[in-house]
Length: 270
Length: 143
Image (cartoon, rainbow over all chains, first blue to last red; front, side, top):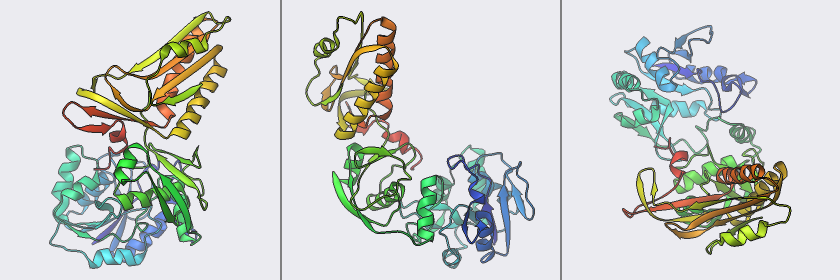
């Protein structure tokens, strides 16, 4: 089994290159990701865009800039007879023990082995083993214009492992994600009591107008992930706003004891 | 200047509220409940607001737009609750010395309200189903 570290993204939402962020002892996300993969794989490759330079082993996107699924198809095209452990480079809370449990739980008779997301129960495609038997399905999805590795993985004959925990596979797409993850890495999280009030679709989805949450989340972004998992909410944070104590605020706001939070899905007045 | 109301809006009252001897132009916008949306037959709808913040944000928008345009007075009311086809969902009334400011401010107010005021709309369709409008767009990648 070879390891594929995905580093070809443009970090558009983040604004700065996620791959070069450092979370552990000054190591970049790429250095740390390769270290993790090397602990469980024979050989590791960095997945990059055609316009990125790299030393060492690399798999260059062969299907243009179409995201992780294209990267996986590119790796499978280069080495069709081996399994790939595919890993996103922006998972700072992932530890070697989690990768080891993925490898230990691997079922080579299936087309893939993956963790289940604790927020929505779907497969986690970017910390998963893609067996050689998945190659033709991945390739035809790419040829059909499918860009979503999750939907492809869901339709494979895959082996699902239980979620390794709400935060283990948390990735960084925004500044708020980075704050949340750093607080967990540095173990500076503080438990606080927050009141969350729901309106409209969120009131219906949660089945309540308001609830008290005991949370160790640093920001409303973290709290929303907890709530998504708790109530199985299909909405994502992208496009949403948040209010704390009756005023709009940023997702990077530091939550404090006793605050009142309202999550605001896209509005539709007028 | 901005109010939520769970009873029918009286557009005449809003017009009278912005009437002023210095105003030579008046523009208003009324949003009505329509019987169709994206090819589906709508039977009725419901507006739900986060009341405190909706009124605060609505007020901020109307004040800001009045400041940026040469407006004499402006009022806006938005309905909440269950509305039938043809009912008035929102009414904006703007008076100004001249027509350009009245038209421009009225347009700017409705556009701004639609983008940030925390009010949500649930459409009930004639086939018995219902959906929170725009909710699908934030869940588009949720599978």
